[in-house]
Length: 85
Image (tube, rainbow, N blue to C red):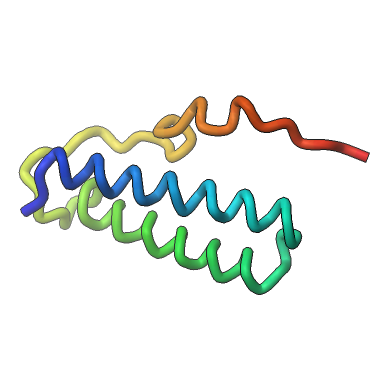
């Protein structure tokens, strides 16, 4: 069984991986092997989070309404500026 602290740690891990993927995407491009690998790792973390904390089969006893992924980190990239050509 997972605690609320476990859930927060898992979300922090997801956020760190998301930021890593953004940096790799900016540095090497979205189709680079490093970026794709990181994206797959992020997908796995998101799937694990959903299974452990949001799904009906979740082993936890503190089900919450499922939130859209973008709402979890609404201000995560507000300081980033994306250059357009």
